[in-house]
Picture 1 (tube, helix red, strand yellow):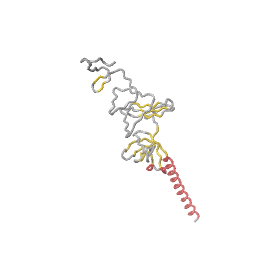
Picture 2 (picture 1 turned 90 degrees about the vertical axis):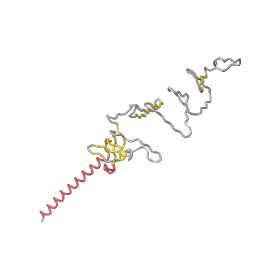
Picture 3 (picture 1 turned 30 degrees about the vertical axis):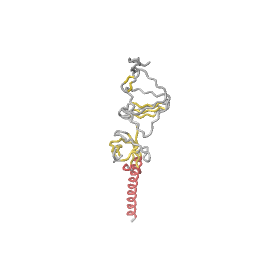
Picture 4 (picture 1 turned 135 degrees about the vertical axis):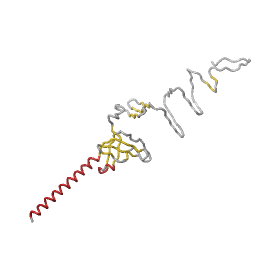
Length: 209
């Protein structure tokens, strides 16, 4: 009877140890999955979802985190190959969220400035503001469109426009002196600084002085 009880006790201990080991293994797996890094493999823009490969695993379609998603909203979807951080609720990758992004050899930082805020785009577009110099630089873009229902105001000490052609499609009101040089000024087909008027004696006047 004692031997049977001892065998039963030993067997129970073995089962308890196995159960405990299995539980510890599962707990460690969940802890490991709480925070992981991975690479975006696919993006579903219509569903606002992405898939991420982390180690030998690949997530299902999961959400990525954004700056704002309330009265103010932002949109900047991750791209395939982008390195992200995965936060998994309870360690379950099916509940994971992707947080962009982490620099990598394939996608290094666009600048090493100590103070500048820089955004570089794949088509060469570049936005940079550096408080050390007080300059905001926009370059590499094909077009800039600003639409306002009421007014666009620009207040500065000097406004310089360098372009092949400057076109204004509206009525123009200018308050102040106008200085013109380095070319002709044409109004309704008439060159203002060269045209002549009929004279009082039937001839023509000279050009403008």
